[in-house]
Length: 332
Ligand SMILES: [Zn+2]
Image (tube, rainbow, N blue to C red; front, side, top):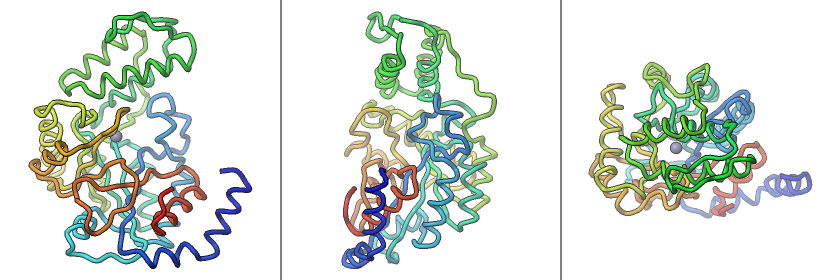
């Protein structure tokens, strides 16, 4: 945000006009969507991707703002709110994380605990103590020294001579991987690693371990499912959809010993990332809520298996602007 714009927005917030407008709206909950929280985001920019990493200092400021000015709620409470069995106060906020990065425990949980904010962390059941395909894929195309390669999916020769072109190839391969069944994805990544002569082997684990997941629960936070292998749920077969929803839930329940009630639709690369079929399978798989990446707040009549969230901006000013607009019923 440039300085002049930032000052105008800050002034608008200080006038109290937003809180006046928000009082006119019915009850709602804003669900925040985070992924990775790192002290040094540049460290994993070539694998996790800088777009979904929040610096820990900014995350700390954002959670302090939520703790000081909002009413934090859990996803269980979001479900009760959607069923009409619970009222929530104004400025209710639920904090969620997608994917299950290790830093959720080592960096985010201490901040959440200090601020008294509960969170739900949606874990990819097939990538606990492992590396998600999209992190390996990003790394392969960011680090390869090859100047060209034969794309195994289209059979055509692809130029790799500039970062921009390599990124385009990464996106093209992501589209293929996002629609592959879980049983094929490791093989696809291994083939690309070989073709591009790069293997992603981080020194420290980037994803949570099962012990780490159990610790998060002991700290009072919740675990949900983010599928088995992070496909785009709207682009896979009905059988695979069933496996992604039910098997991931079964694995998580066995490992943590708790009922898994909440799901988060992965949204790699293509849109839509959910549809009526995904909602139907989510219902039969026994989930009570499912969150999407569609932007907006949750209102009391909303369906619990396609809940809106907001992607959190990575500065405090942009965050407060987005949140206050959402409370005032304005989409930003
Ligand atoms: Zn995800």
